[in-house]
Length: 247
Ligand SMILES: NC(=O)c1ccc(NCc2ccccc2)nc1
Image (tube, rainbow, N blue to C red; front, side, top):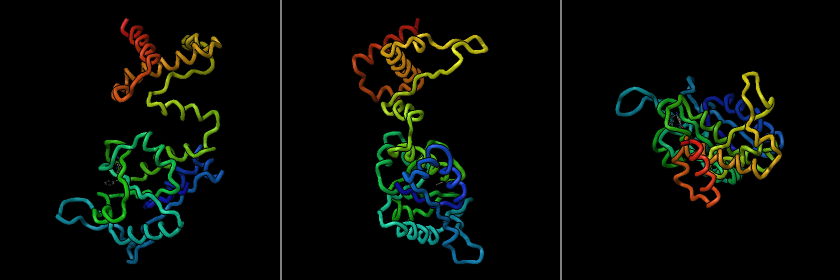
C-alpha cells in the first residue's frame, strides 16, 4: 500500500512511520509512506501557505493554490488512483471497521490541515472523505495521519508477527480486550495472576478471556455491546460475569 501525506511537517510523518511495526512494514516493502510539503509549491518569497479568513475574525486558512499544486504532484507521482482523506474535527469518527476497509485500498492520500483548516472549495473539489480521530481539536491533522498510517499499516499482510497479532484479533470482534499478565506469578506487592491462566486448561483459559472481554465491554463501553448480537454462549458468559460483579 502506498500512503502520501500532504503536510507542513514532513519530518513528523517520516518519524512516526519509521518506528515499530510500521517501520518494519516499510522495510519489508509492505507499505510506502511519502510526505509532501505544500510550502514547496509556493512561488512568493515568503513561501506563504495561509491567508486571512474571509468574513473577518481570528485565524488563518490554508491557501488553495499551493495545496492544489501539491495534490496534483501527489496524484501524478504514482499511476494508482488515491483515495484522498482530509483529517478534520468535522470528519466521520474513525473506527476499526473503517480502518479495515481503508487497509484494503491500494493507495491513500492524507491531507493534514493546520490553522483553521483548508478552503472549503478545495474540499469540494479534491477531498473524497473527511475523517476525525476524536472529538477534540489539535494544532494540525498530522497526528490523525499518523494514526491512520499506524492502524492501516499494521493490518497489511505480513506486518504483524505472532507477538503482535493478538491485539489484531481482540478488537476485530468489536469487544474490548481481556486483561493480560506476565511474570512473576505473584509480584512484589503480593498480587497474583488469575489461577486459570496458569492452569494449562486452554478451553477454560479461552472461556475466561472471552468472559473478561465481554464483562469489560459491558462495564466500560456499553455502547459497543449494544451494537452486537451475542451468541447464547457469550450471553451465558456475560451473565456469569455480571453475577460475580454484582454479588
Ligand atoms: N479530531 C481530529 O481528527 C482533528 C483533525 C485536525 C485537527 N486540527 C487541524 C484542523 C483544524 C480545523 C480544520 C481542519 C483541520 N484537529 C483535530
